[in-house]
Image (cartoon, rainbow, N blue to C red; front, side):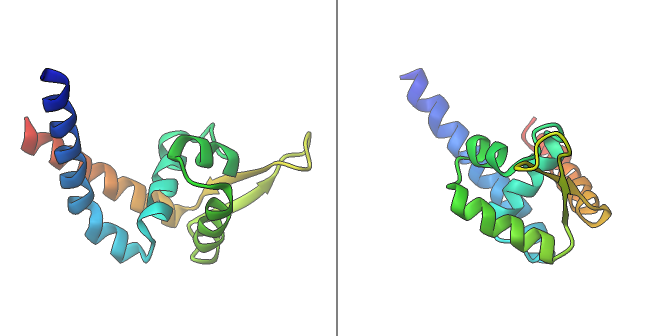
Length: 116
């Protein structure tokens, strides 16, 4: 019984946080999955390849490529070649993305304050 209640509560909190950050997502002009990928890059700067995003965010690689292209074209992410492995490309947040990342973190702090 406790497991089911925990899962229900977890889902409710997740939905509430998504709702709270939706205006930020819309203001940035990003789809929810692209926004999630951008926040992942901010949270885990050392995990900065499309493969990392795909595995951690559970997004198909073809869709990750599309979201990365969206973020690059909107100035949120820069691609950086990896000299030791030409097949790899690192994804680096721009200052524009850092601003959105900080705003999301502010939302997160407000959210935590509200639920505690």
